[in-house]
Length: 422
Ligand code: LLP
Image 1 (cartoon, rainbow, N blue to C red):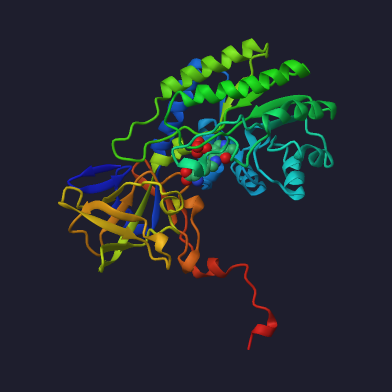
Image 2 (image 1 turned 90 degrees about the vertical axis):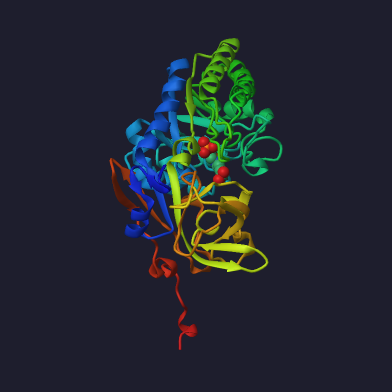
């Protein structure tokens, strides 16, 4: 994003032009920035641990265009559901370029996951016998809850530790792999995903140590090698203005060091190191453009926009901060204002007392920063407010990568029984 003479542009294109051409609310992704983010992580980690591979967690921003960028960069896909596996497949990612890390799976999920031939990462020991009813995969991975998790998004996105619903308890890990080995499974991986949006570099080697102590013990006891160990995602980005970002160099160096030391300590044949970052790639490469439609001066002055919690739910859901710019007015005097969307819910009043340009008016465009991760993917149609369009900017041009929803999309798949007609 660039601001020149108060005018905001993304990937060299003025947001006013994007809004005029595609309408608002509009998600805009900067392809060059996504690639840059990916390469930064890849190059930094491979410097310290060359046998390194990344799987993009599709849930973060599931537009096939974005998943294709990841594929072109060399990433696989981390999928949470059969439909995400299908999406990965639709862009050419199959087999061991796909990791299936669903949780609390149905029999149907398990059968289809197995049939898809991707790497199956089981969230619980109880899934194994259910999986074996449908067949025996060549390789299996288990998601371990190493007992500790953390997140800048607070409790909400802390995915490990005693209060998390994910992963095997450490005491079940050896038994899980014992059963897998006894069932004739030959190849093994291990996985964890302990939290999202962490900007503390030392966290990554710390949790790696926890996982390696559990997995190392299991490997030693059962005499199995782990082909890969997947440390999940979690690489954080700063959301507040002036907030310090993740020291990637330190995170990579210390994590690789811990990984190597622990592999040697437990006599493991050096496993491949996998990670599944997502937010770090697309978070700061995505922007949400909205329009100010109506301004109210009641108990407070409230700026009404079309970017409510149905479009970007993170602030209402987690209390997350997203910085907002006003096109053409960034250098103007500021006042403490509120900003909301158009839903009939007061949680939609997601900005309170924010310093915004005092002369903001109807028709102005607002640009929300860091909207690329868990933005569009978590949006919904409540109040008949339909999902936004998505655009990819690259080489000075803008391509529509998802059309704005229409009324037909809202009622698609609904049926009115005959007795209710007439
Ligand atoms: N791998 C697995 C198995 C995951 O569940 C996730 C995200 C990732 C990788 C990618 O994590 P990341 O690198 O993006 O931290 N909706 C929340 C974030 C939820 C994270 C869910 N899992 C938010 O808006 O902050």
